Image (cartoon, rainbow, N blue to C red; front, side):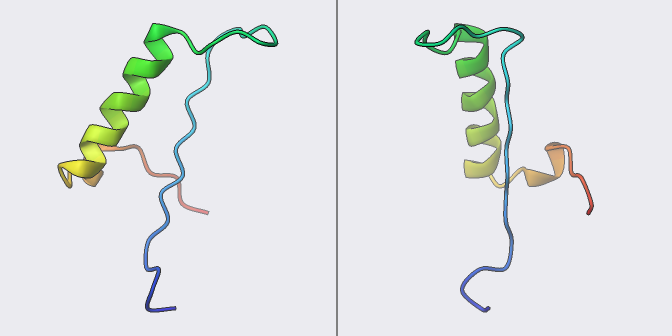
Length: 51
């Protein structure tokens, strides 16, 4: 479809997370870094897996 040319799937997983706990500050920072790369159009800096 012309509406969607690229799909970005980002997975950031903490080493350990108990049920009901919030994401750690490290995971939040990682997510923020990835979001900033996307906003700044620096997608080439994000690891890409080809399927």
